[in-house]
Length: 363
Image (tube, rainbow, N blue to C red; front, side, top):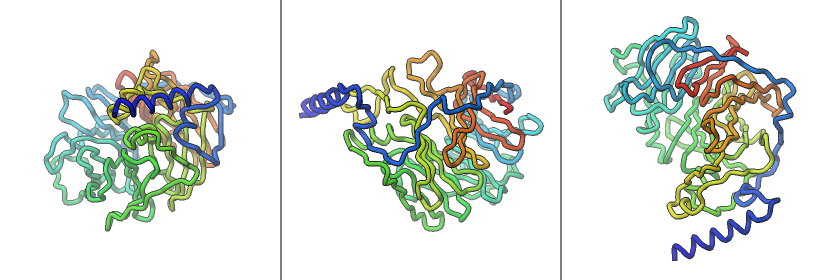
């Protein structure tokens, strides 16, 4: 029976895609109220040249955070017991480890994202493995201090699986998305009682062709909150769509590009058989990271397939939009990066290069 089901679904898929005017996107979702852009929409194009930022500390950076004059770096090196490192922006110097790997009270198992408190007095690190969101004072980086001044929110208490990307809003609430949800674009949470408001978008009309585990992966997003804490911005990992919402969850912008049509491909047979998304050599990435700073959206776009000579999780193309969707600038980076932060004061972009180095670009 299972083989017959897979054959029927496969037959439907091949039939649906046989029409050259139809795309995988049209088979999975209808989206309305979209503003489209193309690569040619950017008349202001600049090539940015990189310089190495980090000193001789050996690490494998995978994620960056920025606050005031501090740069936080999540370290994935197997040979190190350090999980999060801290650097001084002004002095370009290494300040030391602020979290070690482990299960002890002052240790974390993973670091998936960083965020500043709204008063800029503490920085928050999310342990995606333990689903703990930990805030500690910016002025005290010592590993030897107690946890008396720490704030810890256990997001497992929210009864929402696969929480990711927590970010504070101005009114004491915070937003998260879930690795297992796609119709719910994100959630707005109250830390006092862990009540959560799911945010849907009426512009999306999903067609549930596959299991929720496959659909949630295909429509997964990166999430950020702008520096004024007034907007929540999403960028599709495989669907080349940028979504902007206000803090009440109202959609204010749907920006799609740079190519018409969603040409995402994956290993259909193995995905249906295992009920999980299995990539194929033709699988493409859309957006790799997104940040919103001083009314501008910075979006790192890949567009490459898995078999590209440069890994499709790295890109040298950074688009800049206004918050209402105008195409402002395109930055061509002289080395591909996978994650970045924007320092408006210094007019500088920090990123993680293919060589596992922290690099920066002045713009």
